[in-house]
Length: 273
Image (cartoon, rainbow, N blue to C red; front, side, top):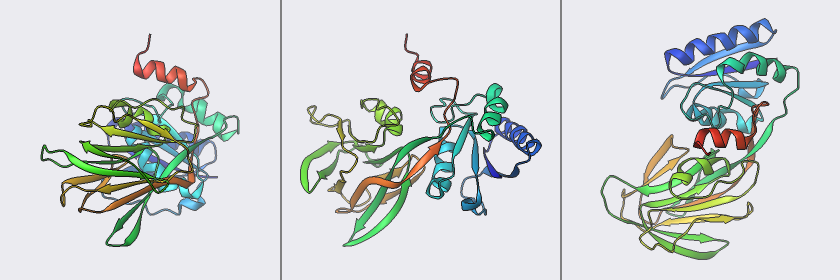
């Protein structure tokens, strides 16, 4: 069995990552370790892995998901961040949970991902598969941007405001929630559309079926709109650039915390009650 330990670049995460490596080695697992340094790449054959262990926060988990999801490699997240919606396992429980995972006592969850395509001058380019969200927002200048939103070849509306979020169910507890969107159970399969600070207050979040395709046509001036994917990859857009967003053919396979349900995590993280 082969595992990669993917570690956030912080002293505490490195120390936890070393503990994970030593434990997996003691269980007979061949272990690779990699510190998630910005701009660096891990030179490993991901298709040969049986497990990815992420030690960090939700951002580190999202980066790991982009690396291995298309190969069907399951992910276990150990929390060394602030929120821990995706890195569900706390350090004090990690050896027990890892032991259960290796013994096959924990089942993976399938999380829907989003595929994004950029159409510019009639040429379509695949941008990638993302677990959380695709965001089209204004750049630094404090001016409203203009985005035409289409789905199933029908114009839905034109958003005047700070931008648009297209989220997966997993991403519904991230930026989409802050912008007023609903929480969607993460094992659902839906597309979530959330306008960001729309000038027209009747523009409301909308949950769409998973087989729909959403198209966002940028009607703002060149470089006024900025595209962000999972909060980690991004680029400026030109006027009349179009984004096509749909359900990915790949899923993120992740091990949940066997001791806590999604609702328990939700109540803890959002401090309900």
